[in-house]
Image (cartoon, rainbow, N blue to C red):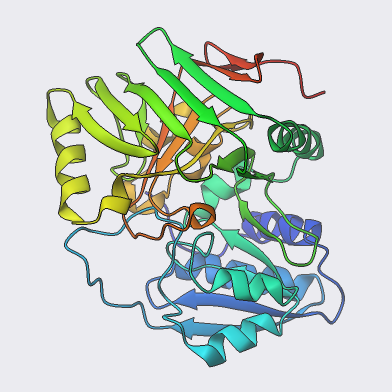
Length: 348
């Protein structure tokens, strides 16, 4: 689809985001990648850092063998480091880590130790840079995401409903909420680019109800728009029933079961997209190898439902689904923040 060559405009886009990460003249920056990383993005990150006067160095790891019976896609839980202490030490000693691993460090086991050292991490999603350049920094969006994050952190309950039949209740007490607007400039924090998302990791036993994935909703792990509805029953965080006919429901059932892991059925996080630049139709515009779907997670007004790892509830698993659900109503303590898939003007 694209020629994988260095383009000046892409260096500019990378430099713009990295400048928002407060890269300083002479700052030593670690670029973390693996053998299956998108080489074009690795090169762009290096050139952009050099343009900003930083001193980048590379840590390149062999992509680990997949020990699981299912292809690993879109987990945000890279296993590239494999617990290697010297790698963790080197990353922890860097004030900024540019993460270009295939799956990203968001839920990786080593991430907590790296952040605890004071390092900040920018995870650049495994997208073709043509998509990244459209999702450049937006200060107005950052302000809105911060406001949404503040609201969710102070909330007690999230409810989600839809005309398709969704009726989901989330007790927000004890939930950990993060907002991502596409860059990080504070020590000990992680952000991913593209951004424009607020998500909460609920405490154990706090998610219950029915979630209907309707025609046109998106299974980002499979990188496809749903052709038929699927009804999920969720009890104390766990998907206990998957109802629906057709390929989408059958693939979902088979993939969940293949992990042989109860935690794969559990809720990872819930939240909503806020980025008006993110396009719902973008998944149809790229070859599958050219997209990780992070843009779709940020589409304004989608209810972003995920299963899999939730370190805040003490759950780790490589099984993961990210599913943007369109057309829902989302209420926070009774206040509508999304109605029929449209973000409401409550965040300034």
